[in-house]
Image 1 (cartoon, rainbow, N blue to C red):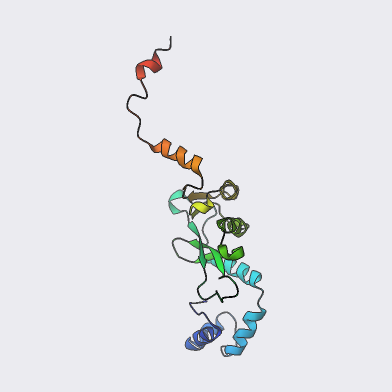
Image 2: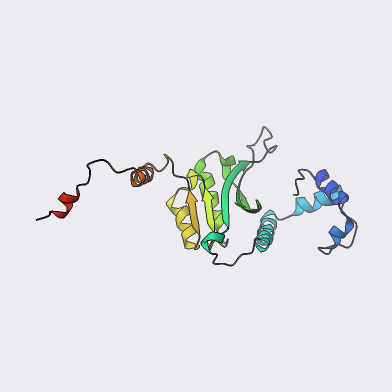
Length: 198
């Protein structure tokens, strides 16, 4: 949070900022110390916290539900392994995030099962991540692993749009796209043959 990666760093951030910053959200006492921060974060329901953060960020980015194409908000899906989360006994934590292109804010994130070893795990995590988010008038971008029918259909069903890379994981679609944009073959179409049908 705010770039802090430890309980001590979070506590230091709170100590470094003016007390009026703590009063704005309704806190009436001095900033919490390391032990208090640790106790709160350990007891925190992560799903509820993530949900609250997502709703807060959505409020910050509030746009009309139906945006004009020129003003549509774009969201990027991106998976990363959290630095420092590998401890030798278990795999690194792999998170999938939905980021707002313009602001860089993370709208939502979810842990990817099995440390994201299998690309299908990230695809399945994306389906869960997008549930309940307002996508109408928004563009969701992602790499080729999200080029799956169920993913694209979920975005369409939420009245959103998508822009996804197409690579070798969808060979027929890739071929069809290449053919659609290939220059015409010389002599493949004869106007006289097309009009002289009998």
